[in-house]
Length: 128
Image 1 (cartoon, rainbow, N blue to C red):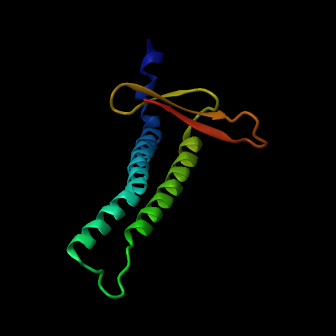
Image 2 (cartoon, one colour):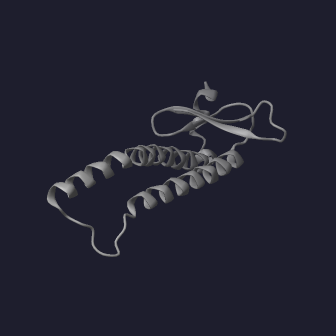
Image 3 (tube, one colour):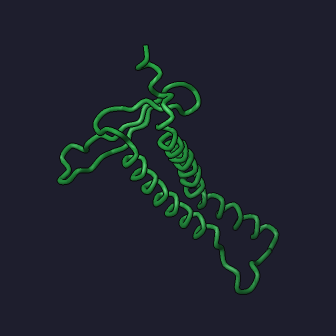
């Protein structure tokens, strides 16, 4: 019975915090990806509206939104890679799941060796 409560171990709290941050960053990346994919349709709608009202952009102005979304995507990818490295470093074992408490019962996180890689590459798997 004690093994069912292993996920409540207080030494796993830093790992749990990192996994929660990783899941939040993954969600932000999904949202940013959707935003980036919808940019062409948003731009077309803005240009159509500008033509209908005969408005011109201010002199010297340019659209920065696309650049900002691209920069945000790069930052989120970098952040996810860093969090992935940190989580793998915090895991006590490799090639098996560790139970963690993400707030709604036991979840699992693990680092598993990537088949066919030349070095010790691990992929992160989270079951929540």
